[in-house]
Length: 171
Ligand code: 5GP
Image (cartoon, rainbow, N blue to C red):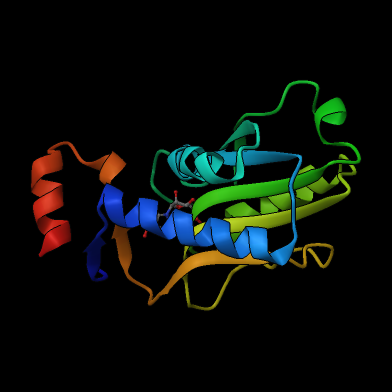
């Protein structure tokens, strides 16, 4: 089992606030953000507090019922009227963690097929480890709120007992 690290809501909110400053300072001004669900939903919502851009959502499943990634990612839900909403627009794709990079690479390829003007990526956490897939070459802007070793991140939204989670995050 890899080492686990518990993150509190406050830590995540602060990381997103810092991330938003870096994105704004870069000059990238997205028309729309796309949150990859479910892990990207809460980070995307916090980022909206700072960037004030609408959120579209996609649902992507990487792990199957047997907990393996056999067959790769698949769509659980996708954007309605995707052409109208993405074509010619600047898109910021948001997820909580870039682990093997499989999910990000899959979503980026799918979204790029709808001819956005540009797609950039923001994740809360990037694990610094060998990746199983690559960002498409058209994607030149990538921001991670924090770089981590190859640990298992425990997010507060997965907590059944949030007080116990907060205690672990504070430890
Ligand atoms: P990928 O391997 O495609 O980069 O990540 C796939 C998905 O696995 C992520 O979006 C996330 O939902 C989940 N995942 C990967 N690593 C972690 C982790 O350390 N903690 C949690 N909670 N989920 C993770």
